[in-house]
Every structure is written in structure tokens, then in C-alpha cells.
Image (cartoon, rainbow, N blue to C red; front, side, top):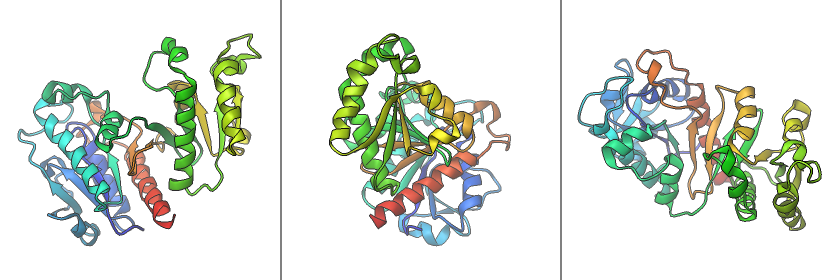
Length: 325
């Protein structure tokens, strides 16, 4: 266990973020020191809370109560209804979390889900989402989204774009950077000395020698061959419909996919509640539960905290891997 806490940024306070953070503390308090950043009024009323002025105090307090670095969000929260007046507080909690991990006062950052529309309406949030904002705070140009569970790790090369736009966005440069960032992260953060990486094709049957598309021949295979010649353990391009059964998964540590659903459908099928969103390529560790704000069930005490718990566990494990490295 690392000595610095895993920081949890509060996310959208009208969503399920506060209650899954509370459930995660109850599940992990004897194993992992935590520090929650947000307005303590948003946490469940029956949760033991310990305000702290310094992150170094979180370790000692975390066994008995959830340590909180308190912020005042102003107006009260109505579960299920986002209030733009809270937007700046949500943004500031993320920025504070980043400051703590980059300064070494925290081991990793786990972010609760945000509601982008409320951030735009309340604070002119200029980023497509969490990941892009974190990249801007870190001063990096390109990051990679990984979804990870015990059964599977996947990385979509293109992410939140229309399917019709994928072929134009799928460039050799983007695929090369995705592979290099993923390879480095597996070694540094997951303790995989020689990562085995499977690369999917874009088209059915991986293009079937150009009969169903040329991207495999013109883009994917040349990148795979070039990086393999430099010593990376790569296979592909592979037909995506044969990559994710149990036998196939034994032969790689991560699957690089070409678009969003090609990656997310298999991992959500195998572990809908256990998948964790990991941002690779940042100078610090960031994980997040692989779900949204769930306004429809917020405040009802029925939210499933499994993904948040797994996100914190993975963040702690990655921090330990960096320490040991």
C-alpha cells in the first residue's frame, strides 16, 4: 500500500458520485488511504467524515472516517438535477486533485463522473470531457483511453467520433502514438515487462486482403510491422470478431481497437460493473469508474459502487507499480 492517499474528485454532486465514494470508503478503508475533494454536505448523511487541512493527514484518518478536503459549492444539491452553479466547484476539485498528485502529496487521482452540459452552462467548460481537461492541466498533447478489468484490457484508437469519421481519423501517426503510449504504460504502471499487444483491424475479417477495405494494408499493418521491427511484441491486424473469446485473450495483455464500440462492447460484456477507465500518457495516475452520473437513481441509495471500488484499487496498484519501478 502506498503511504499517500488516492484522491477522489467529487464529480457531479447531483449524480451518484458522492454515494459511490462513500461505499468505496466503506469497502477499502482498511486497505487504501483515501481523500475526497468536494463539499461534504453532498456526501450521505450517515457517512463518517473527517475534514483535513493537509493531505498528509488523510492516512491516519481514513480508517475511521472519509477524509475530506472541503470546498464550498454554495447552493444545496437536488439529487438527479444538475445545478450549473456547482460547475466551478466540480472543475476546481479536479484541478486540486491534479495538483496533489503532481506535487507528490497523493499517489493517484480517481475521478467521479461529471456532467459536461452543466459544466458548460455554469462555467463555460471548454473541453469535450474529463480526459481532455486532465491532458491540458498536465500539458500533454496526446493521451490514450484504456478500459481495464480482470478479464480484459482494451484501448480504442479513435474514441468519441461518429463511425463514418473513423477511417479519416485513423492515421498512422495516431495509431503509432497509441501503441507507444500503451506499451510504455503497461511496463511502468501495470508491471508487464514485455507487453503482448493485439491489434484489431478496422474492417470485417481485417479487410480480407483488401477485398473489404484497404486500411489494414495501407495504415495498420505498416505501423505494426515498423514497431515490431523495433522490438515490440505485436500481432495484427486481426479480425476483431475472433479476438475476444477466452482462448484468444490468453495470448495478449491488451487489445488495441480502431474505434469506440469495437473496444467497449467486449469489455462491457465481460465485466459491465467491474470495468475501469484509465487515462494513459499523463504524468500521473488517473482512473475513473466506467459509467456516468446516473441521475435517474441518484440519492436513492441503490447505486452500484463496484466500478468505483475497482477504479480505486487499480489506481493504488498502479501507484505501487510506479514505486517499485
